[in-house]
Length: 351
Image (cartoon, rainbow, N blue to C red; front, side, top):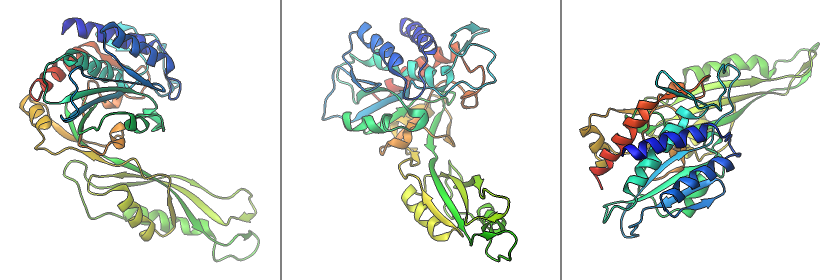
């Protein structure tokens, strides 16, 4: 375990030092492939996605997916460190992608390597290091799933302080339009769409949905963009809005889209419907094993590759979510050391 943990930290340092913005992950995919070559584990590559399955894989057994991503966002302008310099200071490993989600990724890769050659496991294991998670791209996990064996349950590695995110909110984004009558500003107009805006905003402010989730609470609806007009003397025909909807596990995206399209006081068009909420039953043996180890359960408001999965899934990994996408991003070295140990102990209870 100590050797794997040290190797995992070295892998993370190399990943930090290798820029891997979404859709530009070729070199980090190469480095991850080198890990599997080092441990004589056959792997497959689809685009910039790397995946492998355990040595004793048996199609008759259920399959547990271990997944995290190796793409990153762009570093923000508030960085004072070099985002691609993996330096350790005061026990913190600094660098872009260290917390989101490099720590989880390398810990899961170490976990998979530890159990790769296990004889007669209860579950098959599939490890998938995926691309384009930050942009929910077509070549992320959602695009890889058709290449993988059937997945029955998954652990998705994201920063959760190694607690159990047993539910995750989905995402719906709507383009909305308030319609009116265009005309010259000098003439009377009782159908100015801009004048309808306060009423529409108030509707979104006050609207609530009936079903509340124990872990994810209410569906959250937020108006995030408003745009109208180009000339000072022209009343526009439309006001355009963008609506961000965080969906709890009581609604499918399709169901919620129908409700909002019918109810809202403006024309609502969903951009996509595939980023659904995710959950896993509290009675699932994976959850029960984590609880027995003293891990807490909670619902996560942030989106991950769980949205691509239709099977039960658990989000769990080292690091702290609020560090993600922050300036001078870091993860504590001891968090990775603890993560590898906890992951291995967790799977020992179910394999």
